[in-house]
Length: 354
Image 1 (cartoon, rainbow, N blue to C red):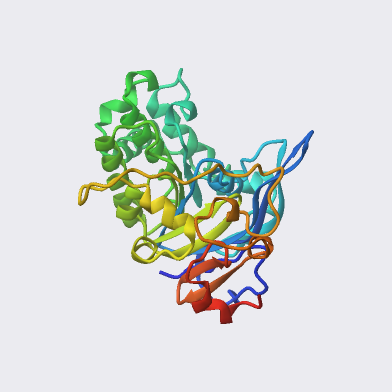
Image 2: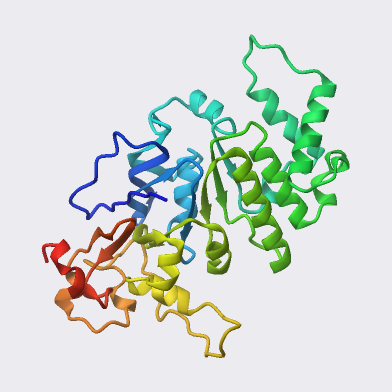
């Protein structure tokens, strides 16, 4: 598990030129132009994921997770825009290629399992036709087209791989349960064996039993394809069971990144600490605690450490006003260091110049 991450506040970025990353997001920015000003939904985020790695991006609603995922797929719509940075898919910059090249890249090389499968499926088309549409659309014009039997066999194979009976292909979306629709979305996503899969909260609105089944299926598909997975979610329990590496976003930036075992056993930043403390546990009875306060408006972010107003760590106004830097405190473990949000700051103070 190897991940390289920086934020805009970071002073340096390690050389990635000789590393084999499936997805390398560099200083990525997604802004929304509004009458009240610019909303910096994703502001200078960088991360890189190796082939076969499972990376989970977590945080409260509004932290920028889904915005990042959709922008990587070049699916951001006005007033949103990619304001800067690069997205390298095995070395190809998805930000700079043409719209037609990006259309061909989607599904074939990088695929999306969307949040809310019902909204992504055509209600008046049978499931089989929706799977076939994506396959045919990516066949080169001068290449021979598969016949009806070949396409039917391919659809049946995909449905079986995601745990559905072949007869589901003859149904319409409204005839399926929520879990079945999500599996169909996964079948479409893997139809051309992509090397990277982005799963945007694939278990939202599903009951806990179905959530576990969906995540198990996603894991099996990922292993079968040796694909890199970027999982967007906020269910820390599911993340703990699925991910290799976890990144925590707050107000458009990454505040901590670490192997999954480390993020749950030794989070250093106050925000992931509070996220984990809010998870109910069967091991002990304890009062449920939430994170005090609310996320700041992205139109009016506080200067310096944006988490400081919610941080339980005693700090001075000068501490809160200092712009934190995301640094590697140990191999593979990156933290946005600040005196206002990291209780153990003095241990790592030598890594920063404030």
